[in-house]
Length: 292
Image 1: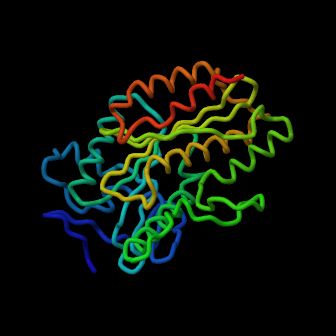
Image 2: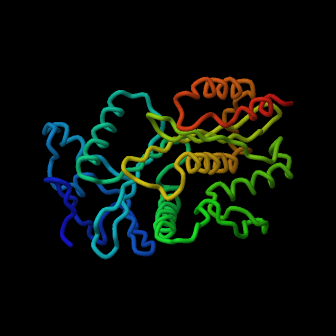
Image 3: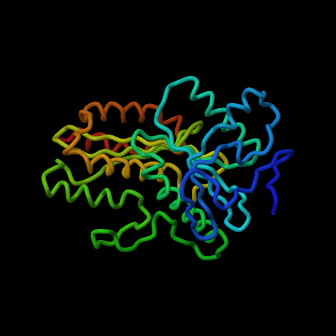
């Protein structure tokens, strides 16, 4: 198979050894690290100036998942730190436009902690597995348990959701509490999906009484089914990020948020419930957050 066509545009097959890092083989997919958009898209899509295309073609995707047999790109993944920079936002919108014009599904993960080098391969492998599982379930007459809800043995020997990306962090939080490094053994969180925006997940740990370590992760899928519910996926990623920071909490104590500040943030989120897919389902958290 030579190219994947979308209108007048072409997605180029990706050679087996392409990229700027090791190639991960996962079932019938190859995951390439560090491919530029210009290595995947052969021609400038209409509607973009030469200058815009010159900028967009240099966009570096952290991971590109391809069909192993043909090299056909299936989707790309980007990791970003939160930013209010106008130039970065314009570049992101251009990338989205090119991906849409060429039929390349794109997933963008925004986090202060999660990075492609330390977390990318695991997260992308999870997506490959979740999408494969969902595709198989869709072709079955039997009502299947969702990928995220499959129960098995957890790292601490208990039974639980084995496809919870935050499972190990939850176990480590209990261990940290026993060692008196945390004030509460439970990692709490919430997730929402904005009607005209990304899915968003929050997670927090109480490091000292009334002082919280908070992580927020957004997930924006452009033309991509993740195989799991995006907002739930975002919360699991936030738990994963909290666990990452807890591992260094003694050596390099992170900035902590007073409980009252988190409460105020949750109230602001609740006040925007009309902008959410579904409804705000976390009114019950408000008194729990303020409890001493």
